[in-house]
Length: 99
Image (cartoon, rainbow, N blue to C red; front, side, top):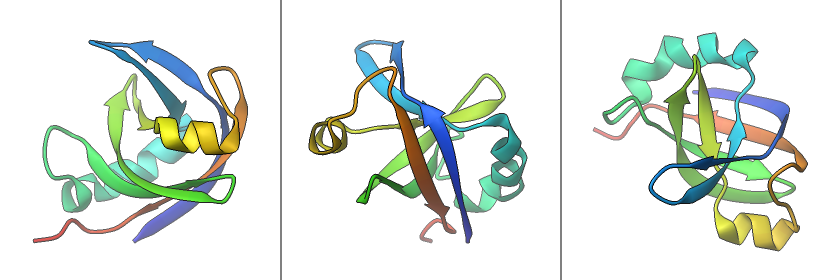
């Protein structure tokens, strides 16, 4: 299992619909890459448990521009009063995928 914390600024990325992400700093991308095959369930996405401001949630990291994006669910943003452009402290835990 891999667990780490980082500070980042929430961004919006417009795909088919607008989404809010916490970009993972490049310094952590190498650690994630080392366990990607054991943790991923396909398409390069990696299931994680994340925590922002004491609110834990499950989601998946998405590869983007040499690092990963952590989707921040609307319920988490609303509960913590955070939005695009806000600085947040994030903790991520990645474990092996269920077989």
